[in-house]
Image 1: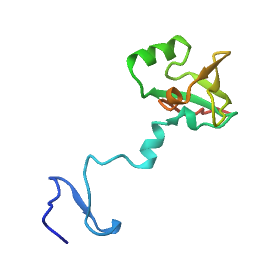
Image 2: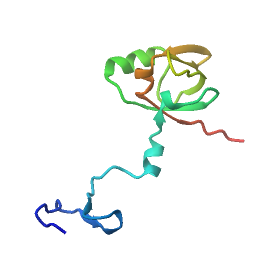
Image 3: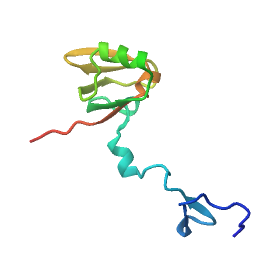
Length: 115
């Protein structure tokens, strides 16, 4: 192993990942933790029932989404999500069209139903 590049303080060497791969304590979270944060709304399939988890956009876009009823915790149903054009979602009894760029910045999680 070439010691020309030393790992940062507090990092460890991951021997299972191949030659000289350092894992920092600030490395990205595991997939299990990332799934709690949700996934982009643009990746949802039609017929999905979801819950809005967070935004990944600026304040102006967040305000515009909130004005349309898309607030954190709200239930969303995906009506249409074609390869081209806006996706259509149902929120609070109305249908809203969202462009793909903005839909990629809205993070959602599957809606938990209590049976």
